Length: 351
Length: 247
Image (tube, rainbow over all chains, first blue to last red; front, top):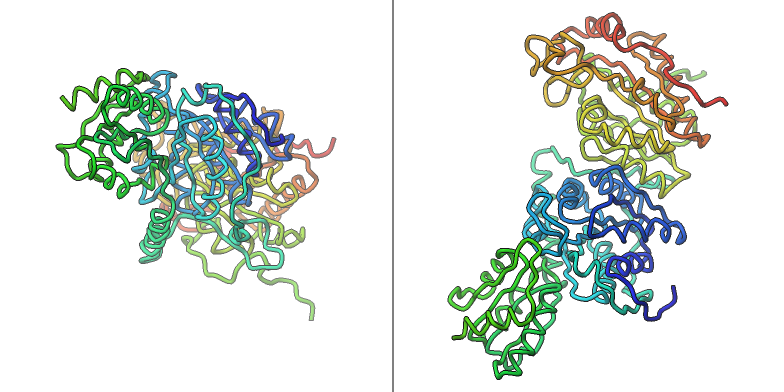
């Protein structure tokens, strides 16, 4: 696919962008609203010379991705909330084994089987753990189909650079939305050869990859090493968009599709004389605490808007450290606010 | 002087952590001998299970990774697809393969993943201290069936080879035991055939090894061997269960 503008669903754009980024292994299991990713991969991946497997379960799919990463391939899986819960086992193991991979979550409403509407209810699961153990997932939240495609490409680079799984945390709205998108092979700084993969010990000593570390102090040392890596990621991977913040009295903090809808709210408010801006975190981990703190310092009020009953708001409160300034507006279970609704909430808190 | 016996190159010179009378040491060595004899040490990737054999990478002198409990076939499937010219095998216990990993083994077999599976059946969960496994014999005492396995409560032992034999994708399935030199030789032959099946590109094969776990069984090493030979084989028949390697 040559670089040009395509009209694509978010799911398809993510899949094609992954192929262009050199992803050569995909395993997944059907679940709405992300089915266009495995459907696209089922024909496109073999065409690109890679492997596509429709796995018997999400557990098998994530462990296939683990295996493909052990063997050195750029590998990915995708699912939606209930399926992502099942993948947490493999994600934790990959974090422990320091294996790169891309995991895409096109979130739907929960808990349980929930529904198939877009949602942001998996924020805690994504950035506070999800699986067991002391680990972190680089978590990226796109707000347009173009950004979903761009972040997919970058996710593979970050995963390889830091030997860490990366989560693209999107939602059913963006997965199903059709928008123009420009796709091309992105250029990233060159990465060192993978000197940890298992491909047979010809000409070298045998290698092992594992996360069981039973010797006295060995696991503690490994956790310190991981923590050092996470600190490096926190210092260098901070992504966010500032929208009309320079003179803003009111700052809406929202990510993903809600960040985009909030920009519409800010425009409505500005048209009626309310100086409103939007801070849109793109990397949810690392979370842009200091940048939000700085944006909040100049503002009178902060409104956090989410498609859940208050998850990212906890991180915003940690950033702002002034609860009197921070309000929350949420629509859970697949509910999605329109700009007028968010604008009305802003008017309410500045009354 | 002609050397007739030595440590295989595929086996590291490390003391193993297995209990007295355990079968893992024997099977590790058989796998190592076969890999040496086939000349594939430098292109082999092994997958260790969760269970007693999780430390297999401390003993085998080739690339070995670890998989979450029950998932070695999924991991192996992917490694083989990414690197089709490498030799990929899983080494799994009965809890790993026949309980938590039932889904993975059935679908790997059904896809006829071109891999080798070495399946250790010792009728209990060894590493966690001897709980009931799906392969625990009826009436057999374990730490979670202290009056003996009651099939009305816990169901029946799973015959993995016979179960997998119903699937179109399986090419070679054999059950062996490692109770005496003659049977150890037969076990080695089966393991070699399983790796050869993969090298010939024929698809999925599995060797089930009835293996003693005397410490958890509360038996001496010799009585452990006797239990395999006299009790386990009544339920788990020794021999080739399916062979479609010659067509």
